[in-house]
Length: 214
Ligand SMILES: Nc1ncnc2c1ncn2[C@@H]1O[C@H](COP(=O)(O)OP(=O)(O)OP(=O)(O)O)[C@@H](O)[C@H]1O
Ligand SMILES: [Mg+2]
Image 1: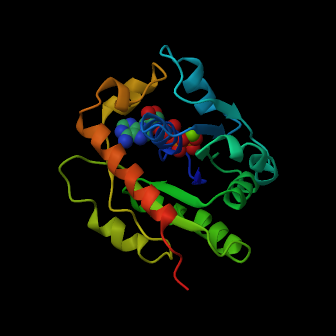
Image 2 (image 1 turned 45 degrees about the horizontal axis):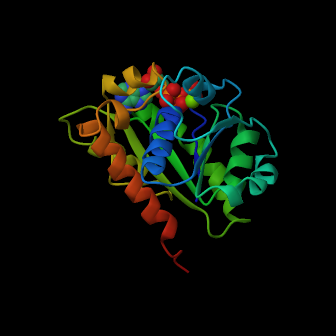
């Protein structure tokens, strides 16, 4: 599967989810490549400060021709994840062209709902060339013990992109684990944060294998 994690809005959790889903897939025995398509190089920074042995390689490829470069890597991996950049539309467009599934993290806030229009528009353009492209919203930084922000799920329903059932809550463990180039799957494998990531990962794998409705 080639999975791009995209949203032109900054700080929604693209890198956090990219390193966590990559780790979840690698811990299941998958051969994973994480492509940092963000000129900020956050996923590369994450991997550079890692103390433990790497579970998967991270390469920097902040290029508009990502969709042309990735096929040469594809045979060596079960899963390639792309951590997308904020703002740069050309890079996001190339990542979409390279992908089977696009995951769009959104925080439960109206600002994120409005800002999601940009990526949804890009996906709509790409759908013309890529009939089999699948895309999903994932709620990130949901406040623990609140309803998912039913308003947000309802507002997102105005877009043609479905919202995944698995939401990821706001938890300091995500930022704390990142500081060591690690993930909650390693720092607290049995914890609630780990379970959220595992559930999210399962849902994404299911979306990938889903038949596209005619
Ligand atoms: N579920 C979460 N709980 C707590 N903190 C989180 C969570 N998700 C992300 N964060 C924190 O929010 C900040 C932004 O997250 P992240 O860097 O993953 O977003 P991004 O979309 O990749 O940002 P950018 O657009 O700049 O690349 C980071 O400090 C990260 O640790
Ligand atoms: Mg990032």
